[in-house]
Image 1 (tube, one colour):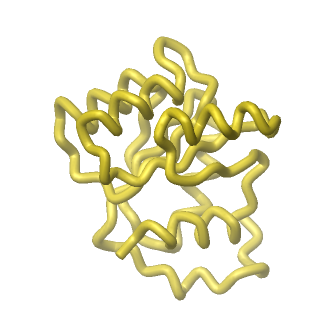
Image 2 (spheres, helix red, strand yellow):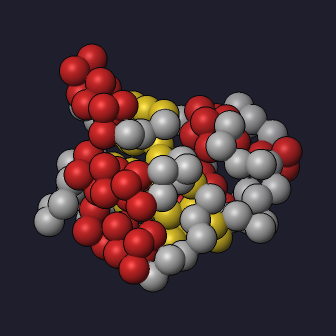
Length: 134
């Protein structure tokens, strides 16, 4: 991980819990590594259904969710809609390789709060997540 672009020490999220909903292990590992120096607790869901279960059934008090769009079982749009129904205040950042404008709009229509296009640079990730952490 190249941390030369940003001083990660300015992000101390040791009291924060971040859910990463991502089916591709390499993408998850990248995001986990990008967040490592923030000290945030990171929890992984491999699909949208798992993400919904963790938020709604298990009631884990996440501070922000990074939601991939294209996942098996339940996609990120559907998971976002369900989570927002139960937890409208939950910040959800859609992350996807599909950068077309209509895909971005689908994310906002589903209820996401922000949209990140892959590949996601660490600086952009940290600055975007930081907007939602108090």
